[in-house]
Amino acid sequence: MEYLQSLLKEIGLEPERARMFNLSAAMAGKFVEAAKEMTEKVTELGPNPLKSKMKDER
Amino acid sequence: MIVAEQKSLEEIKKLVGNAKKVLVAGCGTCVTVCFAGGSREAAIVSAELRMSTKLAGDPKEVADVTVQRQCEWEYLDEIAEQVQGVDVVLSLGCGVGVQAIAEHFPNVWVVPGLNTKFMGLPTEQGVWAERCAACGDCILGLTGGICPIARCSKSLLNGPCGGSLDGHCEINAEVPCGWQLIYDRLKSMGKLEVLMEIQAPKNWRTSRDGGPRKIVREDLRLVSEEK
Amino acid sequence: MAGTNGYLSGSNLERVLKNGHFAVTAELGPPQNADGNIIRKKIGLLKGCCDAANLTDNQTAIVRMSSIGAGAILVQEGLEPVIQMVCRDRNRLAMQSDLLGAYALGIRNLLCLTGDHQTFGNHPTAKNVFDIDSTQMVQMVTDMRDKRVFQCGEEFKGQEPRFFAGAAESPFAHPVDFRPYRLAKKVKAGASFIQTQLVFDLEAFQKFMEKVRELGVHKQTYILAGVGPLKSPTMAKYMRDNVPGILIPDELIKRMTAAGAPWAGKSKDELTPEDKKARTKAWQAEGIKICIELIQQLRETEGVSGVHIMGIEWEEAVKPIVEGAGLYPRPVVTEPQAA
Image (tube, rainbow over all chains, first blue to last red; front, side, top):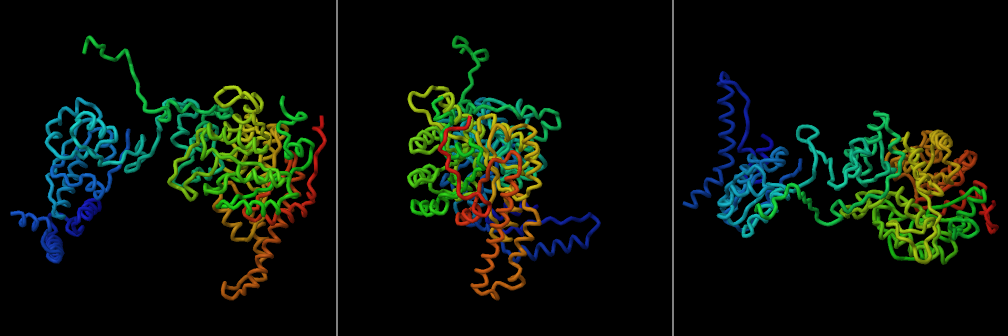
């Protein structure tokens, strides 16, 4: 995970865009929490610059 | 094995320059085992290149391919077509691999994606250490199987210098003193007397100092009529 | 042999040692610039106090005036040089040609050394050489003298360089057990004298000498024990903790600390410049005193033929040390070698 984050950083993307949560299939509450947390984080960071670049190309 | 380390993405981007089509060429042998330039690393580097150049507004077409051994023509023939179709080949092979590509494909621009470090072995997961300096005239028989050329910072032949302390070299506490290792091993094997013999100056001609090296085995060569 | 009166080189150091005098050599560190007057100033401090002065060769891998260049100034000024040569910076070609030049300039003593690794110095990105090691250098130099051949085996046509050649030993570097044997090896290679790393721990040194005597090496070479004045408790602790092969007993550190006791417990700002000066003086006096005591005990040690005083950029200390140890004035040996 650390390695992947370092790669993202090197590429020029925010490393926080990738995270790993460790939970079992029975941990619904935790899952929702994690999904919320990531949604918030990603909303805060804004759309993936790579995606917007793609649109520009179109 | 040959141990290598990947260059930074920044340096790789500089080497790739303004080429539009890039082929990242991995190698399936030494650099795969040391996690520097195998198929996995080739895929990662090509994704990194694709993403970062796109972010910079200069998108490149990056593909990757890995051959069993970049250092043999036969394996390179397999990728001849892919190699010819790009502006630059980023080789994740060792220095031999990069040169093999340059030599085999005279019209192809090839750049290195790795720094070739040394010949060595993994001492633990994620750690590699140098063992052989390829001096061309092996003296391991005199030193209990531990090489003073590769493992003594000064390549001394007649014992340790005055900088050996607590088993490490004067240059760095992380570097074991090669001569302490030799001494300990010979002592444990009851062969310390070997160290009392004065070793004459080494013939460095068999090393790089004699110029580029080459081995010719006439017994193995295909004679001209067979060619 | 082409030597004079049975001497290998006829140098003053060789004559002093061969005639049974307790020898004194001192270290002279060349400057990090091209000012020959600095050498002349240091000559003034050492002349008459030692039998020969060692000129370091890019010590600690920091570029300094060459030992041969500085050595030529010593020859002009009448102080006999021992030039040091390390294996780090020259291959066998450069070593031999420099030695021919050094001999032609009147230099007669040579100390063969491995050399500190270049990563310590001010050019850490340099390529090192280490074509031959110090043992092999001793052999090369003595073969040039005794067999009149270059390292490659080719014979000299004309004057061969005749050096009184020595080597170094660090008695307390590791592996400690191997050190007497390493010394023996260098002597077997032809080292006529040995200068040791700084000795502060006499007990440890006696153990080393015991082994050396057991091997009979002290009868085949002249061993000059390395000594030097401590300058302050801080310097003593630094050397003890950071320089491989230097042992400094707690007792000596205590003595150095005690010497500065009148000023102890005060912070830097509380001490006036006069206080600091007085404290430095007290430390230096104690350092010199310790050094003198060490020399006196080393003189009593069987197999020790002299001392090598390393002031480490404090050449002023050499005279009081030599005088205090009763080794002043230095002998003048003009008579031919005792049979």
